[in-house]
Length: 390
Image (tube, rainbow, N blue to C red; front, side):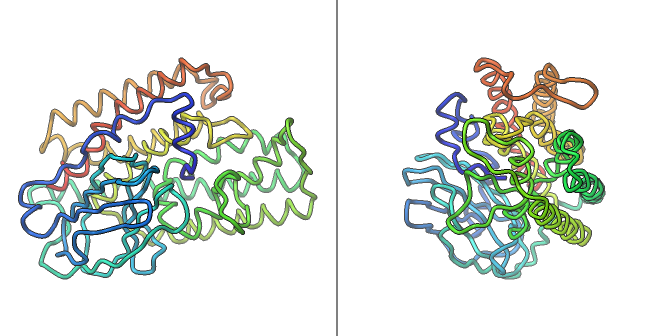
């Protein structure tokens, strides 16, 4: 789930992501002259685009945050719910770039100052230009293989999430809390590995993965973290355990939402820019939620999620790696090396074959080391999409 308290958490103990200060997914010179580059200015009360029309194919959004809060930029489909692409955690005064292959259609751009609410929205019309929205013919076979492999991976993870959720809710509703606590982190890894795909369904993510601290006014709290709190009740504040009937209600809803998610994923196809942007989005999730210990505030199983986000990003990268190796071998080597360094560092905290120590066991220095390793990977990974779609 996206972090709504990023700034405070990072200032408290973790350095700001290096990527936030760099220009990623750089646009080519031709982009700036053919209407394919759209400048976005996000202030505290406005989201201004340099154009409300664009030709289909490769588009580059350059987002500048002129406000006082951390902001996000989203490109939604015409329904205003399905996320086509996004870039998060743009600090005040900083810029980020987002590369998208857009088909001819109507889109809904949105800036979210403070990373709250539905954002400041407008409309963008993309007209048919003959741009295929795909990579060049020279690498099309590799791109097709990457897309097919990633779809298979997402479908497999979604299937394992559904099967695991059935076991989890069965244990929880039967009152077998020990088994439910054991299953909780190992089932959730299947969600975390495909988190950007799951989040692209705007209606499901808040129902399944909302954290208590991020609830909007009037929002009903359901999903994984509602049950997490019941399984690991806080010792420093009053808490009334859910009744058996309440447990059944929340568990049934979680399972129904997971079944809906799995059904929708089966109908998805992927493009190379979605895979590249998804890899970067997973690193953003690590930087803003897992390494800060905010994602699993009751169970402190954040390192499971951390590893799962890295797993998902690595799979996306490996799929595009043959394409990247042709287009930018230096970048390909740099990303691979930094993945290895981060995975080696995280492996220090493993317990058994697939477990991790509690996040509470990490000291400030260890959290800082992990954060720096994430940032070191995020910077070159932010260039992946532009490199493979040029």
